Amino acid sequence: MEIYEYLFAAILIVAMLIGSTIMVSTIAKPTQNVSDNEQLKVAAQKVATQVLLDTGYPFDWGSDITLTPSDLMTFGLAKHGETTREAYTLDSNKIKRLKLDFSSPYYVSPSTVLNLLNLGTDYGFSLEIYAPLNVSLYPIDGNHYAVNVLSQYAGLPVVNAIVNATMFYSEGASPINTANAVVTPSFNGTYSLDFQGQVPATEKKIMIVAVDYSSIRVTRAFNTGSDVVIGNMLGENLLLSQPLVDEGAEIREIIVTKKNGTAGCSIGNISSTLTEESPTRFRTAYLEPYTVATVTNSKNGSLILTSEDAALTYSSIPETSSFPSSYSIERTVMVGGSTYSVRLQLWRMTF
Amino acid sequence: MVIAVGLSYTIITSYIEADVKKQQLKQISEYVALNIVEIANLVNFETLKESNMTRTLSLPTELNGNAYTIQLVDWTSQGRGYQVNASLLTRNIYTTSPIPINSTQTHLSISCSGKVYPGEGRTIIVWGSKTNVNEGVAGITQKGAT
Image (cartoon, rainbow over all chains, first blue to last red; front, side):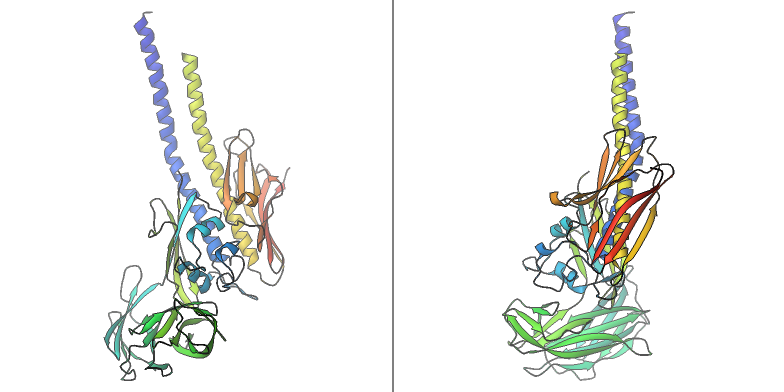
């Protein structure tokens, strides 16, 4: 054999080796991709189970303000009950801990959650909580408003919903009054609210709107005046950014209950008093379970509103709720008597 | 030359095969971790009374002729929480999947005793037990031939 024949044979063998290696790895690739997706799906189901069905530990980590994020041992958003528990019922205080300003000592950061879920730096996640109905409010004049109810997915108008609305208002330093709206539905998902001249010309007013559609209840608190300050209620504690409340001030706890015998909701309120724990933290004498919002007069002439609205966008990558190649899981949950959808997305940070 | 090329080919395919097996092991460990979390949370739903629950897992008896083991490990002291470890008996290939519980001092704990060997005639069971109001334990065990 000549030298070039040896060389040719060597080149042929090496080419065959390279070719077959490429073929083997190419054949294995689709299987590997399917397997990767399947693993991510199972991992997402695992995380969703823990987040939505477990209470976390300590059980009342949302409402107990003596607990800081470093005291948390396991993470879960489910509501704890001493006697009974319901599946997929979440604790609004635990959700609020995720919504607070990141400078708040009560805020639980995504990195803390990742560590508590034992995901370390291998995975990223986002958690979105949103109402199944998109309820928006448009002012017409001081006594007339329009509520638009659309489905969350396609933005289709929701007709035949039962809408109830109550205005909570105050003039000067007078106690908080209420006015119920007369609601007129239309066929395009817009509902007209008429307070029939009950609401005086004041900027200290907020509105609670309760929408009941086929047993899906969505409650929203709207800030309808300019003299309204937003606070946070964590458990029995009213948290403010400035010292705005006097010791012994009255607080109205707003509750939404199902009407007896008929469809729709009743919006009511009970009164309690605030005790000063620190200049920016006040404790209520009694907190009604399933309070959807609270309203109180501040000492500087504004109205303080806290809302239990659980809508949330929370992500391990700030401002990012989705990521390429993530796996998404959706569940319907109850928070404080209202229906919400939860979307959990999980993605790999390492490949 | 032929021997060298043959050897290279064997090494490369062996590497790819190991990768595929690792993927399969990872799927198994994730599946076990999911079941552990589900059973631990289900058993914990009982707030006032003791309860026991079991779930039989559907696992392959072998991975392309290789036997494998599953073990729950407690790496909480290393900050890695509880993990499910799946490994091949014949080769040094293993994977771990985290169980989203990162502390031993909670209402949910994981029993990390022994390994289970899925195989012909063996049933792998995930169990959960609530012994008092605030304490649930979950683990994995096998039934059948040892």
